[in-house]
Length: 238
Image (cartoon, rainbow, N blue to C red; front, side):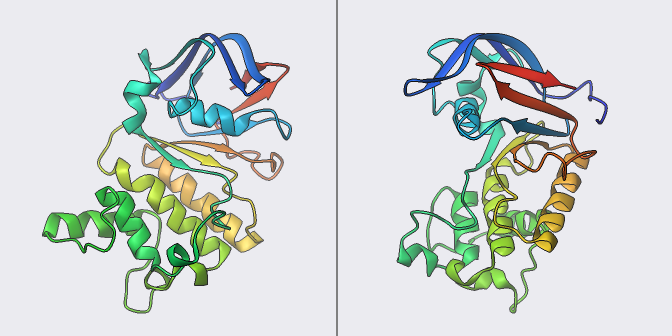
C-alpha cells in the first residue's frame, strides 16, 4: 500500500444508510476515507459498488446521514468528479447512430458540454482538446483511431476514449477525482496493462482514482488502499 498524501481529498460518511431499492448497501456507517492515489472499492457481486459510486456523484441520495467531500456535501463538490460507468467498453444502450459517430466527437462533447458536431472554435478550445487526448495517450494524427466511428474501436481503445470523456470536465482542476466502474472488464492482458499504467500516471500527476474491480490479486501493490463493502458497512484497509 502506498502512503497517504496530507493534501488528499477525504471522503467522510456520517451515520450513512445507503440503499438500492430494498437492498441496503451500508447501514448507519461512519468513517473517513482518504482518496490519495488509487483506491480499490471491492465487494461481492450485488454488494452495491455501483450504487456507492453513484452516491458520490449525488445521483443516489442516502436514506439517512451525510456523505461529505472535504467536509462539504458531495452534491456541492460533484464538479470535482469524473465518472466512467460500468460496461463502457461494450457501450450498452448505445444507438447505432451514436456508435457511428467518430470517437473524437464523443470526447469533444464531454469537454464542451454536449455541443455535438461543433468543432473547437478557438485556440484555447483546441489546446484543451489536445491536452485531454495527450493525458490519456490517444494520438490525434490523421491516422489515429480517434477519428474512426466508436463502434469500430477495440475494447481497449473504447476504454481509453471513455476515460478521456471522464477526465475532460476535470481539465486544470486541482484535487480532482475520477470514478471508474469495472474499467478492466473485457480487456485483454495488453489493454489491461496499458490502462493500469495510464491510471498510475494520473495518480502520479495528482488525480485521485477510485475504481471497482474483481481482480484484487492483479492490482496488488498498485492500490493506496482497499475499501470493501461487506455486511452493510464500509471496511477501509489503508
